[in-house]
Amino acid sequence: MTDNTPSAINAALPNPKQDMADLDRLEHRRFALRYALDEIATLGPSIDPPKATEERAEASAVLDEEATRILCAPEVGALLNRLESNSGIIGETRAAQVKILKRDRSSLVDVPADERAAFCRLAVEANDVWRRAKAANDWASFEPYLDRLVAARVRMANAMNPDADPYDVWLDQYEHGTNRAFYDPFFEQVKKCVVPLLAECMAAPRKPSHRVVDGTFDERRQWDLARDLMHLEGVDTDALWLGSTEHPYTGGPSIGFVAIATHVYPENVLSNVFSMLHEGGHAMYEQSVDPEYRFTSLKGGTSSGMHEAQSRFFENYVGRSEAFSEPLARLLAKHFPGQLGRMTPHQLYMAENCAEPGLIRCDADELTYPLHILVRYEIEQLLFSGEAKAADVPGLWADRYREYLGVEVPTDTEGALQDTHWSDGDFAYFPTYALGSAFGAQFKAAMVRQGVDFDGCCAAGNLAPIREWLRANIWHWGRAKDSAQLIRMACGEDFEPRYYTDYLVEKFSDIYGLAR
Figure (cartoon, helix red, strand yellow):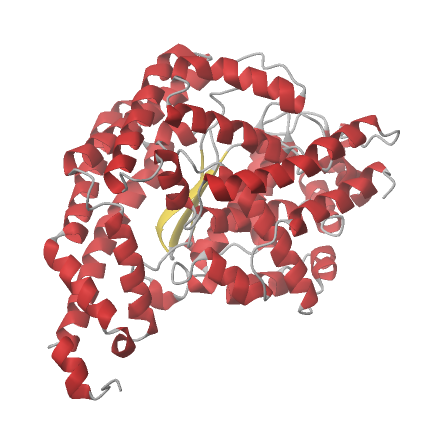
């Protein structure tokens, strides 16, 4: 029989109050360092002048090194072990902190400090080179950086887990519990749905058109539209910084300071619309974490897949729904009355849901989008296995875009240079976009089952009930619970990709008049 008396527990943990106080001090110190590091990473690419790159890289490396040193100290490992062994008396929140800190620590403790610092400097420099390379269609200038980034990530993965495939190590880092054995059947299921469905859509007599939104749209008005979209979506603008960048992203150091950086294209107003809805989903997740977690390791989204579930949810399940086309059409008409004042909600719905194979992932429709992700997933595996080098990437990219999407890649700017992720060393991130899309389909089905009038909320432009379901079931928990736990709690079942493929079949069969 287990002795649960206070004296027995205290024998294992001589000073629980002191250990909990030490945990709190550790979290506060790391919070301050991460705040500074995340603010630099968030604002630097958008506001720093070009000559600041080297100094930003050095500041980032030093801060990262110090945050890592603190967490990886031997006494911290002992502290976390003591707290874990007595989780029953430290409370649910601290037990979750210990779980996450141990996981974070395990990904750092065996990686040499100089390796991490060198990678941090390399990533800042590589991102700056990538920006100039994309603008100049100059793959050759970025090519050596890609090889160096891959090599660095392979070395780090080998240090973290020498018995695992390096690419699997990074898949697990971005979505805990996943590897290629998880993703391969997922992508195969999605591919078996999307490829024939896309072929049917292309051959269908009914052809939706985006001509109604063609034209040139004033950039200043587009920024005004972006701000109105944030309000319509429900982003807390008192906790938001909005800026411009080449590649849209969301970041920020805290619940009270989230940043969205995006772009506007004069010839593509819908790019602005869906970039804002996408990034707004990320922002609301960060802003809605339990305030109790503010200064702890539980602050922020639990994984990249769950984060992309929020962004893709508001971009697609809300933003591209037929019901939401009503308030969205009104908003577009408000800012562009001469060009879009006569556009009907149905015309907008059809325009934003044209299934058209194209080059640019960020502007892809829902149906072709996972094929863009599949290209990147396959190329990353080749890079990490050593079967391909950076010099091979443009050719591999062109071959796969020709095979999967039937399009020719005219430039590297529109090809392998289009995304920022590889320049940041974020290999294995891309698969989480497709996974997040699939999470979102299951969330939508669950909230409807549980009584949320999804279409009614979208048609009224009142997304509060949708946000509240997500806040209660997903956002509130921050990193305290993993994706698999959240899905089980919110949906009453484990992750099931069928919701995603069924959604795509139903939606695009209706749009293109396909028999089912």
